[in-house]
Length: 149
Image (tube, rainbow, N blue to C red):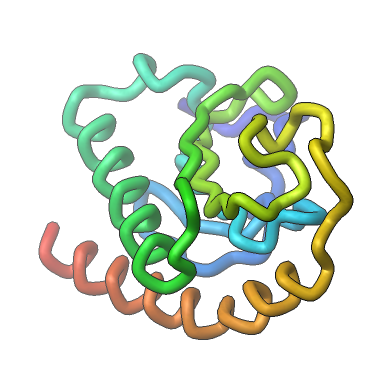
């Protein structure tokens, strides 16, 4: 799993870096209308989840679950969406997206057609919570990573 020359997730973090461990990182994605949009990105280049050995798959999914738990606790979303598409960027990453029933695309996917106008006031209220969310993510992920050693 060597870095690929034209892979944007091999070349850069892929968003605002929240936490980096030996094998994976967590970033906040800049997705307009979805302030609670995070990604768990595998550090080494792998196109598919099944490319990872079983232990690494378990490690990756535990990180996804930890991010989901913090988003649920701190943002109280209607739903958390998890996705690992990789159609545009074939580098293993999981989308962990806090969704609210008022967001412009709910209940559809964030990539679907909008259902309503964006609620900029509510989006800003969520965005105001992100420093606390990200501090909690760092703490939880640091504690988890330390327990692995």
